[in-house]
Length: 172
Image (cartoon, helix red, strand yellow):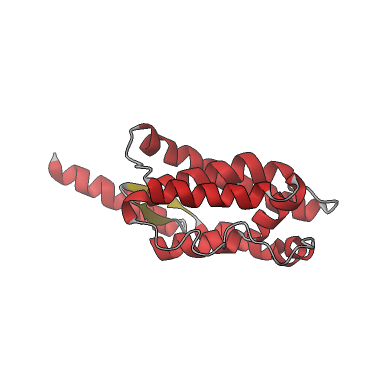
C-alpha cells in the first residue's frame, strides 16, 4: 500500500510539472500554481497598468523590507493575507476602458482566487502561524494602500505584482 501512495504522489507531481505548475513552499504549506501563466498575463498589461500610475514616489509592496526577511514559518501567513488582499482589495477595483487589459486582469484574478482556495485548508488547519513580523509587515502594506484613493491604490498594487511574484519565486 505504501508503494502505491509514492506512485500516486509521483504521478501527481509529474502531472503538475507537465502542466507548467510549480510547487511552492510557504512555511508548512505547499501550493501548486502556474507562475508562468500569471507572469505572462501580467507581462501583457504591465506597461499599460504602470503607465496609469501618476504617483511614482509611493509603493504599496516595496516599502523598505515589506516582504523581505520574513521567517519561513511566517510565509504561509503573509501569503494568505496577500492573496486575500489582492482578491478583495485590488482586482475588484482594477478596471480600464480596454477590454483586452480587463480580460488579462480577470485571468490573473481567477488564478489568484484558485490559489487562495488551495491555500485556505492550510490556513484553516492553523498551519499558518502569524507572528509579529508577518503581522507588522502586512499592516504596513495596508497602511501604504490606505494612503491612496481606492482606484489609485488598486492600480498601483496591480502594477507592483511583479514584486510579489519575484518574492514568491525566491521563497520557493
